[in-house]
Amino acid sequence: MKILVVDDDPNLRKLVMRFLQAKGFEAFEAANGAEGVEQAEKIRPRLVIMDLNMPVMNGFEATRRIKQADATKDTPVIVLTVEDALANYDEIYAVGADAFVAKPVDFERLLGRVLEYT
Image (cartoon, rainbow, N blue to C red; front, side, top):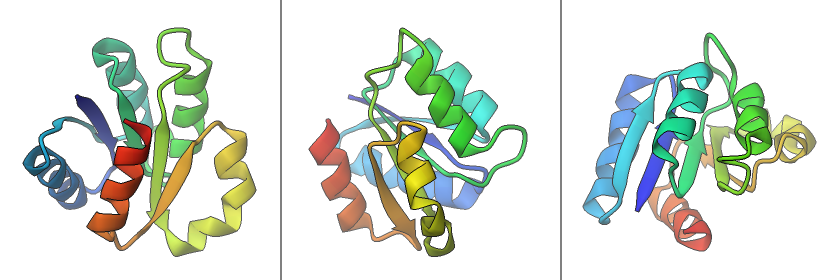
């Protein structure tokens, strides 16, 4: 099962990918929202894990575009973001995100959300 991890922090991205791979998922990566949108259209993942604060294109816009594209509109998006961003709770869901998990990452909570949407 393919999962796309979109985060500008390469260390966190690799940690999340390794965790997912250890659980049997096929993990792909993107370093910013623009790459995330391109990858989502290309690989058609079962799920996207999306950071919000990234260069080039932020996670809000990337999620919006993923949810508007015919090929990926039904792809669940889990936002992975710092607690401070939860002030944008309404906006997170307004752009089409399905769930969120706060950073620092509680991997068991993340796994629970992943299993809920895959």
